[in-house]
Amino acid sequence: MLMSPEKTPQTMKPATAAKKLGILLTAAPAEFQEGTVTRAELNTLLESPPEWLVQLRLNGPHPREVMARKLGVSISGLARAGVTDALTTAEIQALLQAPPEWLVAERATQAEVRAENRRVKDVKLGKAAAAAERDAE
Image (cartoon, rainbow, N blue to C red):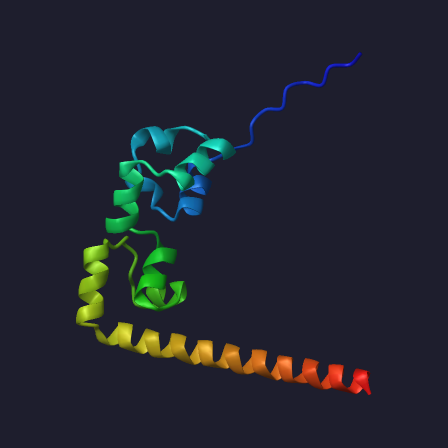
């Protein structure tokens, strides 16, 4: 009888795990940054996050994707504004309370993009509904 070899757990680099957790890798503890993370460990971190992860998600510093979402702009908008450093939650709140010109402009741009995406989606839905109606006849 052939014995199948034990399956090795799927692992990921710390950068991949940090992205899946929505945190900035450089702000994570050294043991997280230096090791590999198994799928089971990632699931445990997601299901019952340790205090360092809770605090990092609450207070930052945050990765670009999270900063952009919290500010209501695109990642490209952050780049156009020259925002290269990770921001903390307090810094993001300060920007939202007294928005600089670039933030106002980028939020307007993002609103236009969302409106256009909605319009395109509605057109596609309208065409699909019309086609379904024709097929039903």
